[in-house]
Length: 447
Image (cartoon, rainbow, N blue to C red; front, side, top):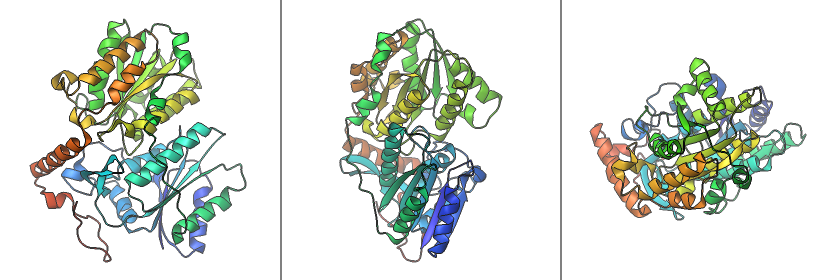
């Protein structure tokens, strides 16, 4: 039995030591990765692990060793404190960079677009979230996130366990789950996809409109790690900003790259957000959730909100997914909503777009016909936000409508991935090559 533990905890929690002890007693072969010591870089969002070095990340910081271990494992444990319903920054950095373990190509799975498997065999997954307090909304979000990761990381089975260290039962619960995972004797059921969940997550707080005050200052966090001026997140944000500024508000941009490490850049970005009336978070979807750097920005911001006076009173979300269906954004939107609630801020609502790579960082005016509905949605949202109101339902519905039919998106995406690969000297067969191969499986798998 081969076990991998990805430990995303950072405060000497006893859970990892307990898991290692149980695994040793069961005779498992263990690879343990304390991620806080690994110092992994955040995902750059450049897709080079698909089109330039298929299956491998070009950043040489240990992530390829982790992927090799995951490929050989029977069971992988994701261990993390629950942060706004999601993972710690340390675990999320690792998860964001596992996309090389699937192919860039898409197919339909149960009515939604998913990536095609690169390998015939994937490990079982066990997610252990350490909670503080009794926030059921965060716990529910964590369960949905882990189920989404189990689907998109192609786990044949998975379990999710949420434990509180002040409850003496945690040791027995984690031991039972680990042994069941090692022996493949238990699996949680996959929940049905609730398509209305996206609209519930996007809906603004009703109390926001009743106490509406015009917004004077707005900070926009661009959550993409791509260079300035090249991301869809920034394109959408700039279209929104145009109408917010027409309403009389002053808008400032901050970027996820400012949160790579503590220091003056991060402090300046945090001050900009703290001194704004409204914070808009415009970010891409990374493996069902928020990018690791966005999580870090929100964690640091939450700490500062609890320590010093601030002007910030509300948060809005503007998310885009590489899948054509906007519903994939539902979990990440809930993470933003949880952040607002836990920080004592109003939730001004959210807009979620599918097929963001169709825009690919271009101004929306350059793809006006395809982006006609997002343009209208952003105009409605910008006007409402400038007035201190929540995002209107009409804007939420407009943004969520597909840019193109899903079947057409998958067909065109295939052609584009093949073209991108050829530009780097990588043919179609190499794009789907199995980077990590064990003796027990064939050398390649078709798409």
